[in-house]
Length: 237
Image (cartoon, rainbow, N blue to C red; front, top):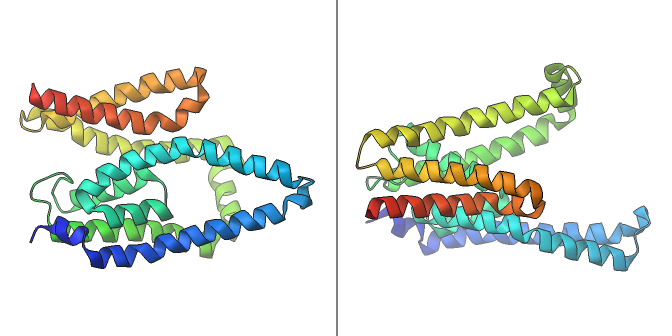
C-alpha cells in the first residue's frame, strides 16, 4: 500500500485533531486572560478589542507563508500530520527542514519516489522529537538560561543574536547546498533551478520589504511559490 494512504488515513486524522483542538482551546484561554488583564495596564475594553483586531489582521501574512509550506509538506507527509505540526509549532521552515533531514539521514530525498512508509514514520518521529526538545528545554532549564546566555555572549545580546543567526544560517546553507549539487545531474537539475530561483526571489523581496515592511511576513511563501514555479517551468522546457 502506498504510504500516502496511511499518511492521510482516518486513524491519523483522529490522532491529530485532538492536538489541534487543545491548541485552539489554549488560544481562547490566553485571549480571555489577556482581555481581562487590560485594566492592569490602563487599557480600556474598546482599545483592547481594537488591539486584538489589529493583531488578527497582521497574522494573515505569516499564516499565508505557513500555509504555502504546509501544502508542500502535505504532498510528502500527508495532511493530518502537516496540519497538526504547524498548528502546535508554526515554524514552517523548521518543520520542513526536520522532515528533509529525516530523509537525508536515511540516504533518500524527501521528494524521491522511493520515499515510503518507513521514511514517513521517521519524518514523524524527527519532527516530534525536535518539538519535544524545545518543550523539554523550556520546562527544565528556562530559569537557568539567563546565566548560560550571559556566559556565552559575555552579557552582550548582540553577540548572542549573531551566534543564533549563524547556527541557523549554517543549517539551512547545508540544505541549500545539497540542492545546488543536484545540478550536476540533468535528471535532478530542476531542484537546483528551483532553489536558486527561490533564493533570488528572497533577496529581491527582502530589499522590497525594507520599503514596505508589511511584505516581510509574505516573503517566505512568495519565494517558495517562485521556486516551485521555476522548477516546473525548467523541467517542462
